[in-house]
Image (cartoon, rainbow, N blue to C red; front, side, top):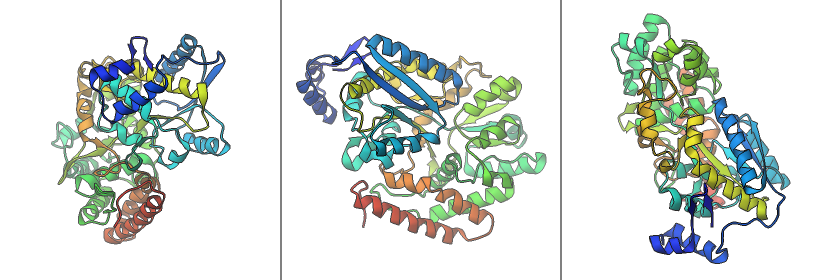
Length: 460
């Protein structure tokens, strides 16, 4: 039914032949019975429009726009791509759903749970991609799947690992030649570096996503979480309180007040300017530094998630998810779905043109990814610097961990409770116990509101 880069075609017979009669297989068989022929658009004047965030690696957008135009010519579909800042996409999507008109495809970097009732289920193309490319990376369905409804409201084509970036010369002088491996290392080594050089740790405590991701990583690593595996709020725990107290200590002993007002770009800017000994971020800052100051870039090391009493756990820093609003219908809808599948089939080009910033949700689409990480084609010194990313899927999780993805977790995360409570404790305005209790109470309200809509499970 769907074509994949001209060399793979999924048919009803292949479903029977491969024994693909699980949930995805049954879905595909039904679709095949309805449309047992290759996709053929009824008109010649089909058009699709795509709204994407402006990529941090400009070469990616240059490649994508050219590829989309070529795809349109090959498939007799008009294609227009618009790029905007990340912050503009949710507002634009909301307005388009309300108006019943807008772009055909939106690329989200944060799961679009808040809009799920205005989106097409995309179970069909998720199933088709699994049949074509195998199982996705474990973190990817979290960005596009609503478990309680068994609904893929989006299609995750990539994700953004967030390794630690540390200045090797500073950490080696402090006694950590491989950088910090634990949160305790970060505190002790970061404090020593700050006291000797004046260069602080660069972990934000501001109402923005990177700050929130760092704080949540500490909470998980200390054994806390927002919800449990049954979608019950469990934020108020001794483990969460210990993590908040830890972060407040890290601020007081190894950071500066600037982190309380950081923007999403601030940690990148601090590392590039030589004003941070450690940040937690995708590799955009490192790639930028390679162009600005190759010698300084060579002094940057990459490290996996920091370990705490509960182990090393960190949030994926973004899911690259395509969604299609319900107002998209007919040939436009079919063309949009086909575009998404064909883009995924060409994902090696997406990874390379993002300078290995994008990671594939379907690993088989980039079969030489390990080799690329071991010998970075973009000039890392040493060449195997990026190999730490080969295991990113083992420590990158969704903010709802250890439970399923749901809109309540994303709302709690987006309301910036994590940064706000840590900031209050760090500044001595309240105790960790009181701050965590208040945030827990708000989480309970959020979860109950979404539970009443049937979009969050658990309770009690």
